[in-house]
Length: 137
Image (tube, rainbow, N blue to C red; front, side, top):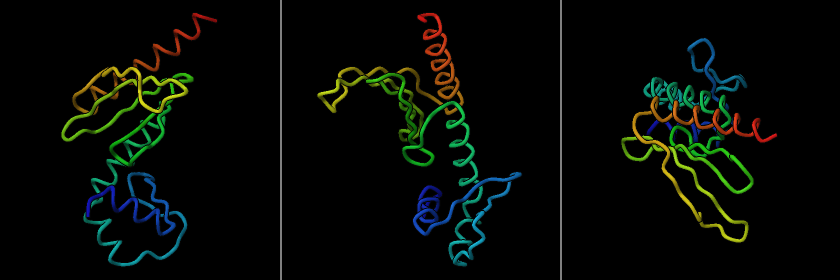
């Protein structure tokens, strides 16, 4: 079982896992099945990394699509940006849709590479959009 599956399993059983002061915490105070606790301990580093990444991306406005691998943000009425882990590298792309069609009419890859490079590009792109909106007001 991998870290993302453990997070999904915890949620499906009604637990919310968080990081507080560098420690994994289940705030509800319910007892967790010992075998699940063992899995959490085995994958603590990976789970912590995923939760930190989720928090960092939520901090700049992304929603979690899939823990640790897919994040999305609406940038306009018919445009979204996606940050996705794609088999060894991260990709940031913009997709534009028309209201009558669920298929993207335009797709542009904005960045690809390691997490920090793509994250910084996403942050810069969102700052650019924010500044552009200010200028048009």
